[in-house]
Length: 265
Image (cartoon, rainbow, N blue to C red):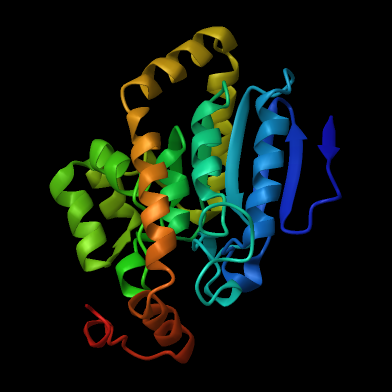
């Protein structure tokens, strides 16, 4: 049976054979999220998380170009356009992905950049197409993820590599991501859906209670990062009001190299 929730504008929601698929449906914006997107994702994850007919949740992006490219730079000039400390309840979304009592698989079909990269990192598992591209851009556009995007990333791939990703803002191939342990599997794009479904079917054979306990046990060791992130988001909110941060957004929109040090005080 397939269930559709038609009242979302930015998100598609589907439940088929025990798998809830949540799709960020903004391909024209490379599946970047705005405030409304985050609110709909929160609703969708709550819906799937407590639906006993769902055993696995898959998060992905519409189209074949992008999984998610983070916050929509066109939706803000300082703070973003939604609720929360910075106008985007991203810390709530990251926490919810970790708290839903069932595995969440990131189906990475293209660019996983910025806040989109953080979303795949906080998912339990990541399966990528060979064409997927990973990376961070925060320091290039006057931003940073001060919680799971930094501290938890270091838990996943190690301090040196995590710092490289944030300090240099390079882009990395799916093959490199697999080598670093950033993803679990890489397949040709035409095999991505089949591979994700195979992993889901294997998970659906397992005890849902045991999986829930295992997930909470895994998360317990890094739960303090949520507190670090909440503190960091308060600092980030203040940073977004500075000329230095705004220079990053302006340079991105004007397609030029930012001149951050002109505004560094």
